[in-house]
Length: 256
Image 1 (tube, helix red, strand yellow):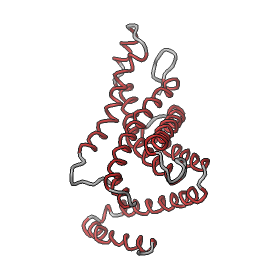
Image 2: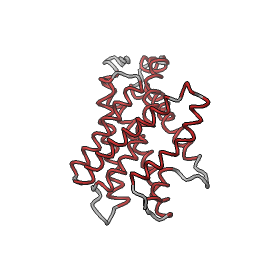
Image 3: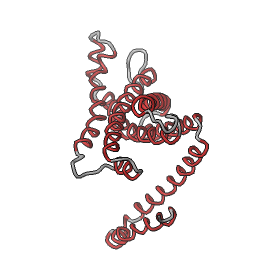
Image 4: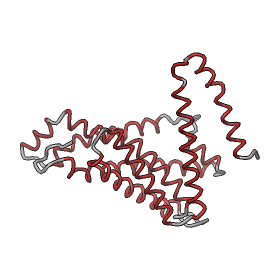
């Protein structure tokens, strides 16, 4: 087998053709993809070093620290891309992500997968499962949270009308929660629907490359996709619930 570093260098040669095409026909925009590749290599190098430490020492506390680091980074990204005040959203998003991803991960590891070749809380199992869940939670919750608060800012009349007519806060917010849920589930459902017979998803390809049997890989992929959906919806609900006190005043007016 080719040494891993040589494989990486040989793989980078694949950029030669697209790099030449971009430079030859669109010189004004070649810097953006080049910087993206460099940024990807730097970020993955740092992540690789962190993963090496987590796998090398393989303790429960390191696994939890790894998840906490992912949650903090994802929360910063959610706040920045949602255009909301960090004081309002950062702590609720962090708590919601940590509780949801950890809870769903433990259910998968102890109930669904229940591995016999090591502790479910070992880095070998815990890191990949939480990583997949965190990636899906982040990408789906950013537009959902943005949709929720943008709808309240731009179309607050139905909310105020329901409150003024004696409706509860939950009843008044229900239409906006519905919009946020649709923003979360619609892209996920579209991606699942686009998986045809001859399209092998990236995650499924990784399972096959890791040596898993095809039928087992497909079953694992399906379970992970369902878990991603559950973790995303749970994170959205907890985020909105925890952010409610900071986002609204005592009279129910939006403060952000």
